Amino acid sequence: MFSPVFRSLLLAGHRVAIAAATFCMTSTHEPLIVVGRFVVQPLVTATDSGRYAASVVIRSGNGRATHHRVLRFVPRFTSRDSARRYAVDHGVAHASALTHRES
Image (cartoon, rainbow, N blue to C red; front, side, top):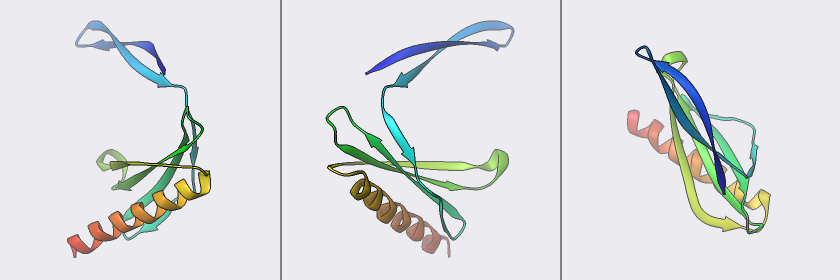
C-alpha cells in the first residue's frame, strides 16, 4: 500500500508538482561489502504477509558519476537472516561477475 506525497519543483520557471510514492514497509540496511570497485549493500524488507523480501544495491563510481544497480529477488523468506544471506550471496556473485567481465 502506498500514499502519494506531492512535492513542488521549479522547472524552467514553472512550478511542477511531483508525486513520490511512500510505501508502508519496514526495511533494514545491512553493512556494506566491497567487491573490487563495487560496493554491495543487501536490503531486507518485511512484506505485508509477514515474510521477507531480499534486494541488493550494487554501487560503483563516485560523486556525480555514481551508478546504482538494484536487484530485487522474487523468492520470499520466512526469516530476515535467510533473506539477507540470499541477497549477499547473489549480490556478491553479480559484482564478482561484473569485475571479471571488466578484466
